[in-house]
Image (cartoon, rainbow, N blue to C red):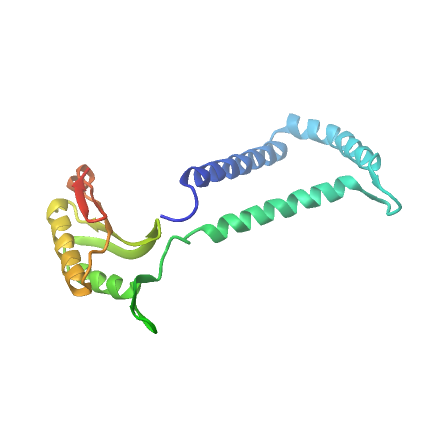
Length: 207
């Protein structure tokens, strides 16, 4: 639930992982395999000479510098910029405002997300059948949505736990005077793995 495409995340991680793996495998092979190390020592001067010669064929007029180095530097800067954009986009789906309503012409009523998050979290902390829980608020299609992730103990009924969370959300809706869209994700334990309950835009269903 953030602004970054999930497929793009996985592709980028896969590409970086493969490149890192290949680089590590190459370095390991050069340092441990005698024949590969010998071939590397024999070919490295030739490769270095070819690259140096290529750079000399595209000099930057009157500067003594090659266009090749500028192109490489530009490519590295572009990669850094793209990585920074990717990093800064992570987690931007999180939203700090749960409700905002213009009550008068001169002011508005704003309810911070932490109000609902702490209220629900306090209720979940008192449930002994839970191993862990986390409540957060995200903005989905310009609408704040509560995300409730819980891990229950083995043997506990996820359906009963989902019903309890539904009741808590209904009480919150009554307190705020409107319905708040929410997503409930339950995991942990054999029975919980067989049943995961999701509640989005006031609609609950088991999957």
